[in-house]
Length: 429
Image (cartoon, rainbow, N blue to C red; front, side, top):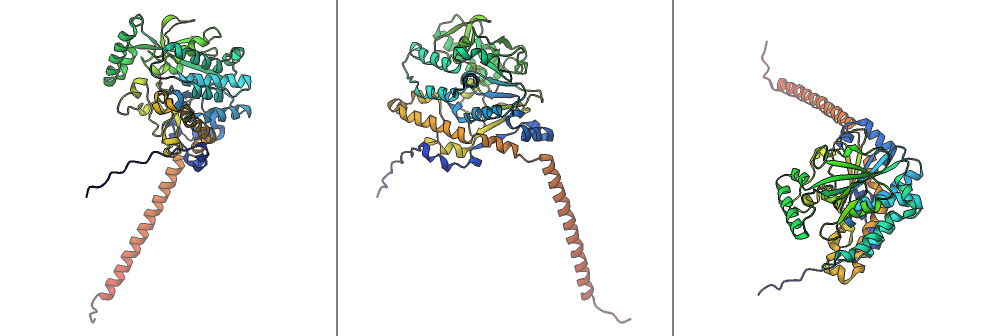
């Protein structure tokens, strides 16, 4: 008799009240830099200073998946309030990474939790296939106003310790006049070229870094296009909204951004094109960096084209010489509704379009869990064992084992000798 097939059960909907099942020590992992793994002084500084040890924080351009690391802002604000952040520190990112860091600085100036307000705005945005750039424009303009209220812009630009570095990609002039259809073909060609070599990305666009403070963050030099492949431009009260538009300007989805004061005309697109997660090799050991990673395997995409490949292409390990990462564990992922991370594609998911509250619940649960548990990733970092001491202990244990083994062998040989003498025939003298 034929076996009747069973329909697979629908995934259980986890609500926010299920969150306590996730233990704090299992939610986030820490990937130490090579410097932390090999230098006891750096490990001691991390244990002493907490987040204050890091001089650069990198926010990926991964849209609503940034909610995975939302606990970072809560932790940093607490340390700032307690006087634990004492040195100049850089907040580096494009796209959503730029929005969240700008909102953090504006929130410090205003006393409002603009990180939470930005999250709520993302949740309430409604965009679907077929909508035009004109539909998206007022929603994005509202996001910029949340991140940078006009009356607090000067405080953002002049914060005494925290500096902003917002990354934007500027398509090279030869491609700028092309209509969308032709430009899509150009992007497709570079996507294919990127499969063969990531160096081709320097032929599509130049990186521009808009920065606050008196000096540019030249530690970003080593990225797409190599040294000289990046232009540094001051972020000002007159170009900040243009820059926020540019760094979040998804090609063929939003209205083109064609002018930024301080640069002039161009075709400015989402910073994730050239700096999706991490695309700078930080070489100065005095400027340790922390990547706010948001995927359980800590796979780190350098450009958005790397993210779109059907296989994983992670940044080379030398990118972590002086850069560490906090990232979610598989257990954290399993605690989320449907075990699913937030994604820009959620806006186009038919299930979420039919029931937006379902998407809201997914994203808010991700945010709330991170705010509650993200700092445990830093606790894991601070409890990282001293590898030199660990190695010395292992060597001592091995030496003790060798001595014990030698003693056992010696005792064994003595016992055998005695047994042999007892068995030896006795001859009369």
